[in-house]
Image (tube, rainbow, N blue to C red; front, side, top):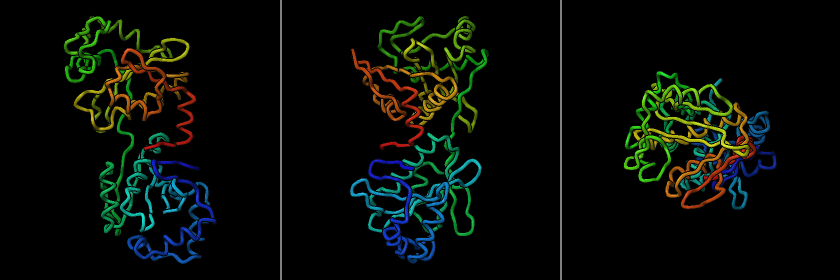
Length: 334
């Protein structure tokens, strides 16, 4: 098992790592808020019982530059729907941002593996760990014994196929100037398109025809609302339709008021999961203006690659094989 971040490699520990790990776990400052420092024999036992078990409970953290062991990552099932996340780092490597890098990397890995929740437990005195938990959106849930417990719910959204009477929401977002401003000023060949605002008319008289085209026609076409779990609010839409034998085209619209919370990336991952795992599509294509840098970053983060640029439009593609490799490896660069 191996995962990487920008500067680190997370991989299985072996008994060959005993001496390097012992130098870390015998440090009184490192172990101050955890447990008494380890002697050599306890380090051996720790590797055997926590790292060489199946599945492992801890993994080694190595620098990419030089392959130096600088600590261990705690990552294992915590309850039926959650995993515990933690880390122990050598004192000489504190203050370099490695804990934040590990946290971000594990969060993205967990999302790709469809893990529902992550839990961080830390001593009440571990203010740095608490700060990192809060920085990445973990919510404080309890104090137990001398531990503070934080939880991150990774599945904030789900996709929902609307009923025809619920298309008033689609009508609303298509008419919202701020939401549709990304379309503004372009020469688009859509009935009801308003070049000055980017909005698109979606009158009730068109709902039935549109519904018959998009809904109930899987795997050729798929459409769903993006729904926020915490309040069951509709916050956007996704769609997918087969354009040719080589790929499907897709679309995603997130309400302007909901942007900046990571929802677009999460919704795009949900669409990819459904497309490749349920509909068994072969590839997904999207294209948009090259100046839309936020959209570009989200697509690249989700595994798309640029296949063509022409007339200031970028074309991106992700294949079923691309998706499988990313899902299997859980390997991301940040």
